[in-house]
Image (cartoon, rainbow, N blue to C red; front, side, top):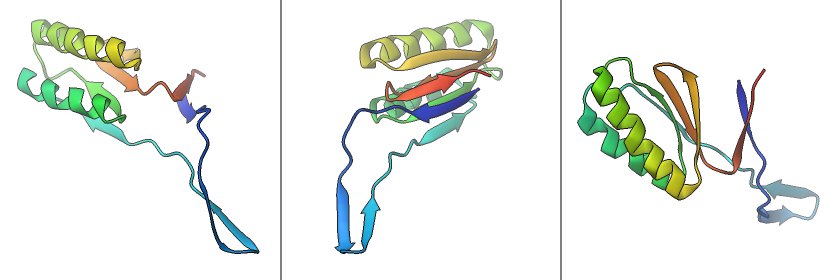
Length: 104
């Protein structure tokens, strides 16, 4: 599975020399987290609000807490238009709408 940007946004160009053009390229901050407690999940919702990606391993949580964590982040994802992908039964991937996923 690969991810890449497919944003339609225009990026500003900066000119420092007439022979040299520097262009700002889009970048993704991907947070990798394994919560030990359900309380950690609230902080991960803030990552999504900031436009960051999140790769979340839920294997350290009890099954009931895994369900609660998925429900909480699903609500935030739906509201923000964040894509939600199950990588494995215990691993979830949340990406901003500007980032596409290519499954190979």
